[in-house]
Length: 206
Ligand code: FE
Image 1: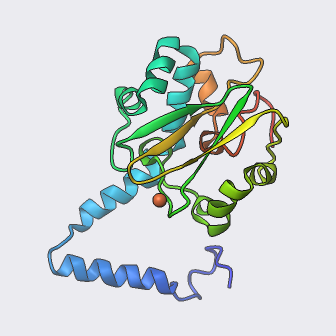
Image 2: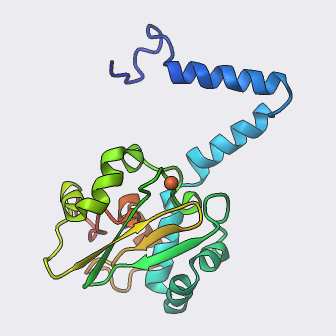
Image 3: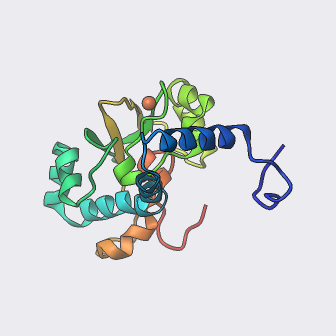
């Protein structure tokens, strides 16, 4: 049954929510976790860390040629330079889209994802169809996201692991040359940094 959040007063919590609650209570009772620390972690990944962090990295790469080189050479170090560090972001590799190459990121095994720059992964990223089809039919997946590539563009699919997380450096859209990093940031979507979409020029909507 779909659950849209408007019927919280009539529906009991889901099975998974109840199980999580039970586990948390038990761990707290036994002194194994501190509820305040749990809240801080959840708050961090729900509000503080997210794709706006990755957008800052991309916008800087577009406007600062030296940073772009450092980013492509050693993603972890360049991203840490901007203060984005933390779990699931220790070994970052940045792959650059060009007129000839389009990069797409997946985790075929589970849901490895660069948390410090993109936050928590979207549900579709963790889904079995995405995880298999990103490899078997990447162009079909891209089409479903409204991304059409010319036949001569090579698609490279990167399989994330717990050792290696990927961030796509999308192409800067036409008409934004000379824009400041701050003006570019809002254009850069989460999906463009996973590689399922391109960054569109300002004023374009999907
Ligand atoms: Fe994984």
